[in-house]
Length: 115
View 1 (tube, rainbow, N blue to C red):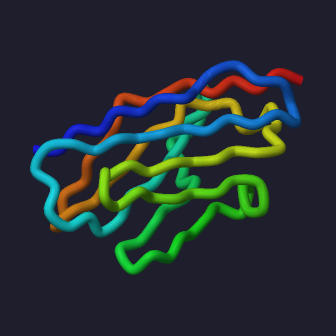
View 2 (view 1 turned 45 degrees about the horizontal axis):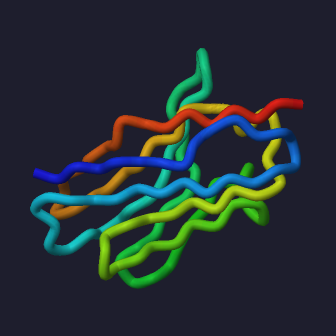
């Protein structure tokens, strides 16, 4: 089993920055994908950013140029640096990990951006 624990959420003004962290523990042997999704009130969960096993990364169009995803492979931690935050970024952010065709989710961390 794999456990994911997020941290770093909070309240920030528009234009500000936050960094989210997600630490994976448990039976980890070969992470395929590790990244972030978010869910705003009344909306479906949506993809934000992901790191790939080969070192690449992908982003949703809505966050390109503002968010940066990175991974510490030695410690199985993924980060999401969020800059130039907008009120539309307000959501619960979930860490996501895929390993050996199995998918795992964190409990989520709230990010609120005030205008």
